[in-house]
Image (cartoon, rainbow, N blue to C red; front, top):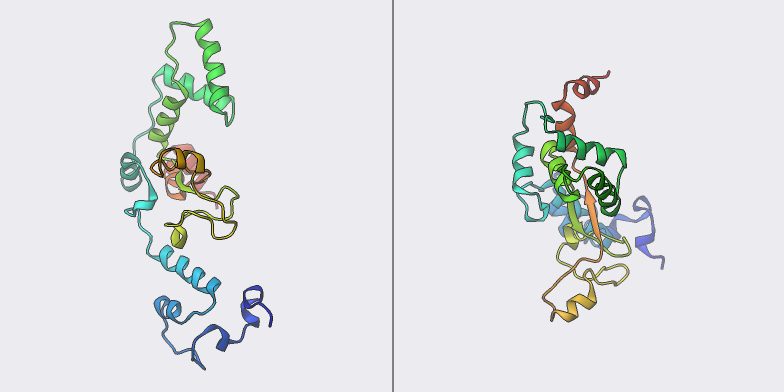
Length: 214
């Protein structure tokens, strides 16, 4: 018998998908479908859909900083103030080197201080914090399988081992050394929410005008 999970949904007889139902009744909601689903892959998909429908910024798994949360709910309307020359220098440095690693930024930072020892140039963590505060754009971070099979969200949220490759979510050496107390994620997945990006674009006159294109 062929594996139902490898077939297209359209090719699977309904009696193999739904339990004891010759016809699908009208008005089924997602909870009804979850109860009726027999295929594990279908159950998993419906579970993701249900959780996406009910998602909220108040959920524990969002991991948004309180200040960023407030920024998202009540976006500032005033222009961004870049009058501080030290802030402007650090922003220019960050932009000039593209998407730098901390080592790249620190190297250039060191060179600047060698030439201008009296200058106050923001460290990498400081300027990243300022950028987040000014723009309101920060990633939502979740644990991820080290082989990128899954992110530990939705139905996978409480798992410690990847259901696809069997690799552990946390560093096994550090976990064992701490007697299972220190859980260090082996891989993380970063999502940049669209809301703060749109708010940042609308906040500046030039980008707001470009947003009205067509």
